[in-house]
Length: 283
Length: 254
Image (cartoon, rainbow over all chains, first blue to last red; front, side, top):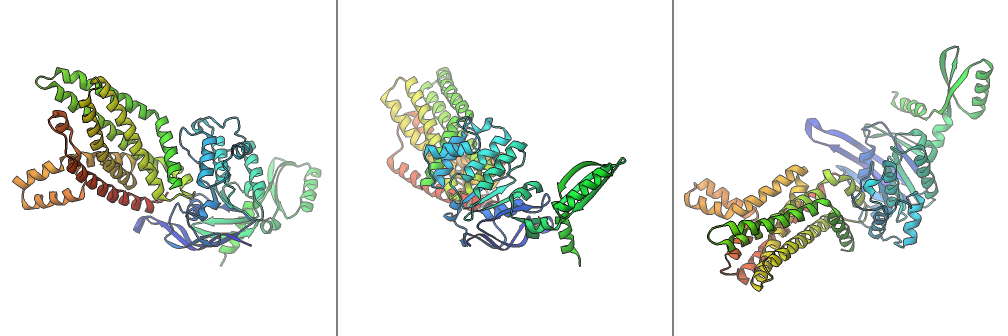
């Protein structure tokens, strides 16, 4: 299977001396084709720096970055699609012009049919000729995704693609990404929303303090804890984690019979990740 | 090269759509009109005053365009996120700067040509005026080609406001460097003579391109050799400052 990305002992520090901040500390990882990888972690964990190092926007102090089994070059950057966090565009350009420009730079299919289908895909066909400066945040995010996808890259890198989107916009982007990932392509995206990660990813990488703290298939994480149920009984809030669906149904029955009121049921991914991290931290 | 040209096309279209450029164009037209009115009020040689003010207006408008647009396009603080979108595509940082430089030169060419045409029309389409304006345009373009590279260097070196300030400093110092060196050679100490001699060779000497007074007097046109020499000097300056700009830009964290 083709390796889309290979990082070896990548280190990055911002500043010097007393004010030096370690953004990445000897990170090594590989992403083969066919995977959708979610990069998660708290603010300042090093997610954006990692994505910038991969795309070449930031230079690592040490380490090697390989794309498609070779060193990163201008040529193999043609097969990357990138959406930065809160993307900004030329003020007066329209979505149609931006996509066409993106296709020309990456030597993609510049036919008007292709441009129209991309605009249609992200739901911007009606606003295609309006200057992007008049777009809402969600529309900007979608046009950003369209320019990243335009040339059908093998490897898609997205920095917080769902940030600031309404539920409809999130679902649209999720469905585009689900459809986009084929066995010959890979997606790496950072997110704060573990629900999105759970919905889309086949693998989760948890970054904290510039280090990879956890790198595991999502199924493995989910297997250990699936749901967290919150309910109220006699004015007291309670919660419990359950490991599988059968246990969940029996707990729900139990709550109902005892007169409790179910407040919410949520996936317990954060807790599970924290639990796994605690295991990792333990001496 | 193809990608540089694509980007140049987009930059140029964006700049032409930018209201600031039209504001500059309006200011330029007003400056020429002011030159005509003020020139008539001058006692002595009104013709020279009109030409002096008119040619200075073209030069100042070109400078305003170079500094404003150069800094806004090349500064990562202003256009950082746009740069991120572009520089992950098969486009090198050198190509990106080259596209900005080509845009700046095109904008200066369009603006100064338009102002020259207005001036020519106001001066009654005379052949003499056409010759003087054409020569002035060539010298102005040479000067702005150097300033374009210097502004790119300033924009990649520092924050936008400081870059604009530095660009203007380079312009002012560049125009007064020869005079200052002449002055310290006569009356300065060995140290100041040394310092100015070093500065003279490091900083671009823009006074070399300043032929406004000569052209305004209408007595003589600069000879071909001085033009060739200035052209060669401009090419060397552009190569050095553009190389420095791309070196700094290549190291920049976006």
